[in-house]
Length: 156
Image 1: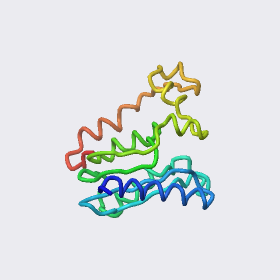
Image 2 (image 1 turned 45 degrees about the vertical axis):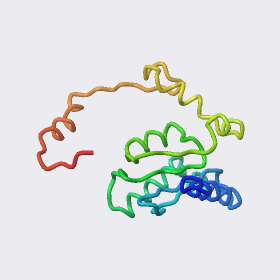
Image 3 (image 1 turned 180 degrees about the vertical axis):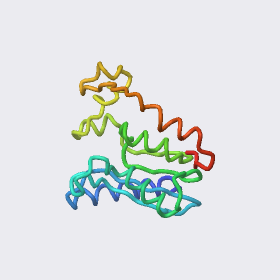
Image 4 (image 1 turned 135 degrees about the vertical axis):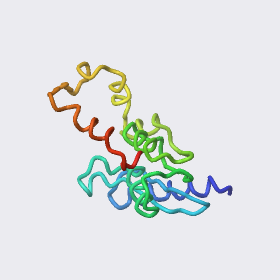
């Protein structure tokens, strides 16, 4: 078994065991230098947190382990193609690569269909099914102005 298959098997096993423990069918592992540094399973229902997807949990755990917000040099293995939220989190975390097992179409067949979100993303905010309203104020530029004028900030 090659190294990628071994780590993917671990992610799939996490997902399967999570279902047996009343969780969602998703698992992820993050690897650095050939070693698993973090794991995550879907914790949405038991933590009452809609953002607690396996990939996000694994990213949070890896960042805590490495004491950084940048996972360059790491590889993410996940039991299923990431949803739009996880996709965004993955890009912000900056791993070197992502390997996934089941496709998003396979997830949809099991009742986890995220296509409606993919369809919403390119729409103008006011045309989305969930109303988004731009509410400008005289002060709305202040956080960015302060950011741009701060010399000792940590870029991310």
